[in-house]
Image (cartoon, rainbow, N blue to C red; front, side, top):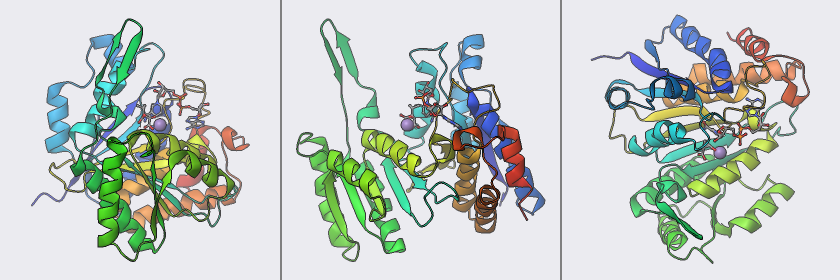
Length: 342
Ligand code: NAD
Ligand code: IPM
Ligand code: MN
């Protein structure tokens, strides 16, 4: 049996390649510790699209689906592609067609960010809802549909309930079922159903608007928050703010039912940050912590923990990029973390 883990790297656009350059050495480090892994670097992103017209070619997609175990992703988005069509054809397609229903976005407690003791995790549905990309623009009228399926909603909520049960913490479902009667009505029915299956999890639904206010006022009582794709996108940028902002927030997406070989994608929550890209200003912590989440997903718990501890140790010693009021550049921050690895 082939026990080599194949990881595909897609650095993408803007700050994506800069933060990826600080995550890639962690793969070499894991290999040096005895993990068997192969790495393949893929060029897809705006530059490649503008030069070749290609977004994510079919052959590359099939190789990722059938030949890779996981994807490490930087970010996509480039002002030269204003309609973001390559982002849709690369990132949103991978999430959707690899069935990466669960997008896990933890707010990791980090020294010096005021999050010490906070343990908040967002479970975002990652493949459908308002991201079904169905709609139309007509004169004087525009339509964006949101499609929710029971299969995906159940998979996402089962993952969120399971995690809340494991942690012994409450679960809150963010919804707007008072308005979105059909789509969020479905979420409420599945949620109700699963409450029966997880009687020990204190679970409640909350209108997303009220939830956001309560979250800003006091995030401590929230353990796990589950949400659809659109609300989860918004909520996870807010929770990122608790742990230092966009530069530090990690995420991991996976397919709980694993129909494909490639069933995980790790990426920071942030985008390509065009305002700071190319200036050695991007914080690599979100990308590095995403790599740790991937290590954990692969069963490499000691490596995952070592990376998280190295980030915490570096920040505890005052290593910080500009977004956190420090003076380190992207590469220096990456090095400050790596030199604290065992
Ligand atoms: P963004 O996350 O790129 O940037 C928002 C703000 O956060 C900016 O001020 C930026 O400088 C800052 N920031 C982001 N990453 C940072 C980092 N690592 N270190 C320090 N500061 C950081 O969001 P945006 O400006 O709304 O979007 C820019 C582009 O990225 C758009 O094309 C958007 O569609 C795309 N995007 C992609 C992803 C992704 O690939 N997963 C996620 C979000 C946005
Ligand atoms: C994210 C991003 C993406 C999303 C964009 C780039 C399509 O904001 O990963 O959070 O909306 O999911
Ligand atoms: Mn987002």
